[in-house]
Image (spheres, rainbow, N blue to C red):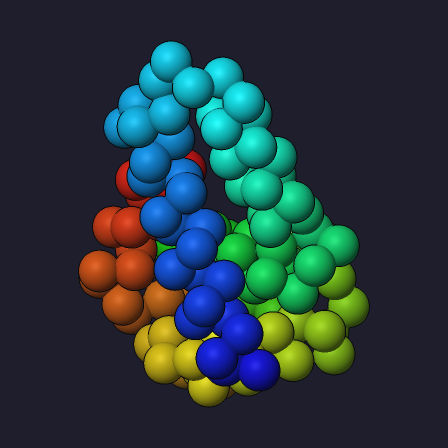
Length: 115
């Protein structure tokens, strides 16, 4: 599960960065395919899309379980499954018992650039 998230993250970040930096400028078909791939990967129907949405929710201030469930639109069980997958991938998500927070500064910066 963790390898899947890491490889998806690398592909997503690379395509998003290339699209934003104008790498596909003048190549309409390639640009369109890149945008479709970004949209497909970030879809909340996929595990990666849910985990990406969860990371964006954690990027701000710490949040409770119920706040994260509401913001991501998933059940409590799915939320904990996605948190476990993120932790297994090496993402530093910490909890004080009531709130969860993202403690990875580099990932937080990368999420800000991709948003």
